[in-house]
Amino acid sequence: MSATAELANNQPVLRKKPSKWRKLRSQKALMVMSIPFLIYVIIFAYVPLYGWIMAFQNYKLGSSMLHNEWVGLANFRELFQDDNFLRVIRNTLAMSTINLVFGFVSSITLAIMLNEVRKLLFKRVVQTISYLPHFLSWVVAANLIMNVLSIDGVVNKVLVSLHLVKEPVMWLSEQHYFWWIIGASNVWKEIGWSAIIYLAAMTMIDPSLYEAASIDGAGRFRKIRHITLPGISSIIVILLIMNIGHILDAGFEQQYLLQTPMVVDYAETIDIFVLKYGINLSRFSFATAAGIFKTVISVILLLAANRMSKRLGQERLF
Image 1 (cartoon, rainbow, N blue to C red):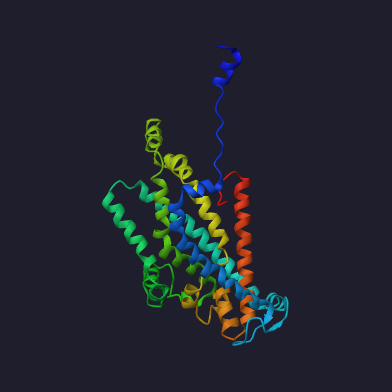
Image 2 (image 1 turned 90 degrees about the vertical axis):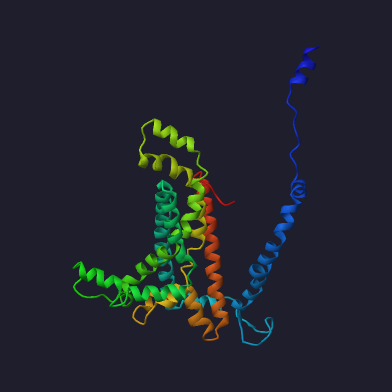
């Protein structure tokens, strides 16, 4: 056999990369299964975008969408000149940041603690108790929180009996407590549910890594630091990016139900602002402008967080 023929036989065969359409055809079953969800997203997420036209009009209730006075960016100028709007942005960012930090730290900590528990029955009981509040509506949860934080509630009784306070505190009437109450109540309600995804990620970590670490003399804390946390780091980054995109979604029901006249200046979020100063006053164009602002900023934050993650060499959404 000649040298040329031998080289030809040893040369690897270059396979043509399958096209996107061929990939789609090979996954026809998955494509068909995704159709209902695609229709749902189009109907409830994209079709309503037609209503954004109102933000550039002086919309009158009952009139045709295309037969209103066009005012350009007047509603947006009015929005940014409104002192109430600047106040609710402050409240929204503050409560969102507190919820983000408290939520991530508490759920990751709970997931790690449950992962270290060796008694399966105890682990299941704790996990079930921790995520049950997630299924309570905020109407029920807010009433429980108000009873716990009332003058004769459990919190005041414990603090007074331990001599940490001299007299009961009106927690929901103090402005400087409200943001932290929102953060703590959100942790209580969502900590167990948020920990589930981290526990699922921990099951994907190779057990041989823990065995090798034990042979090398590593204790539990070193295993957590060098194996568990790096093993779920991709999940943490992905969820962090998604939560940054929702930084302006501080909530509505929670703040609306727990607010009192004394703390209203610290309780109103963008969603409450839209209801109170927009829809309730029939200022639909003004309310739509506020909604567009919230959506645009959320998209910008999501893209910025995703790009930053890419530049740092971490996982990203796209």
